[in-house]
Image (cartoon, rainbow, N blue to C red; front, top):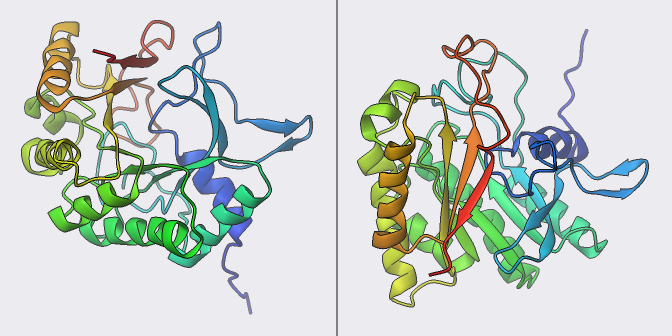
Length: 279
């Protein structure tokens, strides 16, 4: 009889740290490629640990990890979408909080970037992410940098809780217009799932009711055949209306088994990176 063993914490960290690539935190090297995971020693690469460029130009080592790579969405550009048939992983709340604190106590990381796929329900997934950060903040008394991804479609009270606990929040917009988003992510509604939460975060930060000091977002460039002008109009709105500090650009790369697997890729050089607003 075969006995199915649950994945260990290190197996999950290896898988879910590697999958947390939806936001480009590290600067590209001279070839335009994103830098490799941060290496402590020549033969000791820590899963999920990356050097991130901060707004002040300095770097910080972050544990960048997903709560789970299970996802109900059918995004045509995403390796975590329902199109991809592969083994999936998920952390328990306490397990992930404890794993981060263990790595932090070893002086390997100074902060956390927590993202997730959406396992069944946006609000339930967001609630579990908030619980992870709450344990880290309140039980373990960690006061350092935490960037927390807001799940599209999450309820307001969970966005409010995330803003109270996170140093920075991010909600990925992915495409510049509702029509373009519907082409590459038919299950997402831009207004209700993405733009409304962005507005909530801005109000919470502006009113001083938030521990977070800013929000960021990401666009996948080249997936929806958008123009530079389409992107410019949307980004101008985010900067002027909601005081965004950073917009990250991820060049589209086709994923096997997805509807866009034959779609041309976007060259890394010239499209990867971010725009920071210092005005």
